[in-house]
Length: 93
Image (cartoon, rainbow, N blue to C red):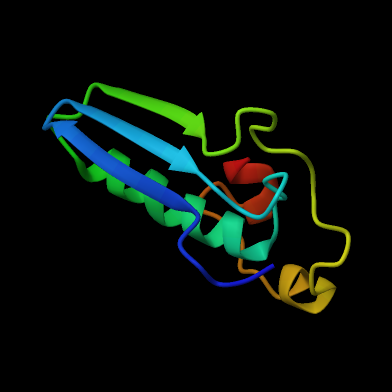
């Protein structure tokens, strides 16, 4: 897809955030989704006062549809393992 920001974070309070996912017409998951989600998870983990995160979709008909089959496979193959040792797709989605 593109490198636009896919996760809009609205910090309602230090303990409560709303995160809206938006990626194309049907919210395809692509390499950018994986990278941005990893960054968001790190941010969530580092927020000591945060207790609730509500995820929602910008499209009421789709949350996260499926993997974008047109995504650059070489980018996916080149992704470094996540902290768990797994491929980032398996670790974050």
